[in-house]
Amino acid sequence: MAKSDLLLVHFHLRRCRNFTLNGIYVLLNAYQSLQSFTLTDTYILTDESMMNICLFIRKLISINLDGCDELTAASFDAVSSACPRLEHLRMDSLSTRNDFDVISCASGSIVNPCLTYAALRGHMLSGVLHTLPNLQFLKVHHFSDSCELDIAVILKYCRGLRQLVILGAGKFKVSEEISKLECLSLERSQGTNDQMLEMLGKRCQRLLYLNLTGCCNVTERGLRAIVEHCKQLRYINLDWCHQVNPSFISWMVSSCPSLRKIVSTGRWGLYEDERQSFLRQGCLVIPGTYDESELQDNLNSSDFD
Image 1 (cartoon, rainbow, N blue to C red):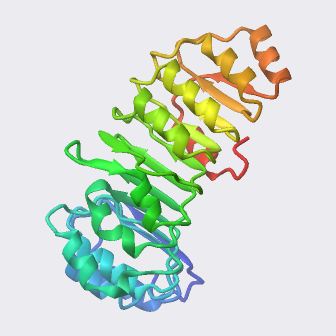
Image 2 (cartoon, rainbow, N blue to C red):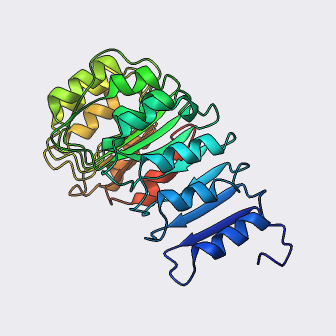
């Protein structure tokens, strides 16, 4: 490939084993105009090898290094510094061995004005949030149960953030009003309960999209607060929210005219006359299926229809 003089713009290797770092170096040296680079689930990629790779990727717009468990914060620093046009960064399996606070605070070069998407592990947040002021999409997962995630703090640093996805978090809060957040996914978060939703409704009133899939501690009390305060809400996913009575869906549809789609708890079989009644009120109600592709489609949708 390196000798073929291809018009190569995107290069992706996922879960491949029969290659060496020298092969990667030769390829990247030949195609330094690459815009998208994916190298996932490989143990041979280290901080030292990332320093070498960064010599060839200055024009990258997107990079995916998921599953490269030997990488630490030093690689995050190197990639962000080497790629001034970088918009999309995935490094959500970074090693916990490194002190993120030390590295990010020691280097002012991490700030990347083009970076709008990041998928990170929870332990990285305290050290890198202030380096990502222009993020529009942030995905956080594997957050420690011993820590409490404050959504307001995330928005304090990332003022342009519109979409926040938190997977499996234990405890979190919203300490102050958030004006810009439009899309929030709290999938499989055991820390999501009625008290948290009441706080969320009061302080995130511009929400358009809310995914509560697998939030088993949510009941009608918390949902009532969301509906009463989030007057622009268009989409809500209640799949696997087993404590929510299916009959509550009717109240939600009639009380929130902005709602366009509700994914109900999976145990509810919807009758055709009920579905048609909801449609006449402008809302599509479907039974839950826990379809992750549908979740991503809705996250990518601008109008959340």
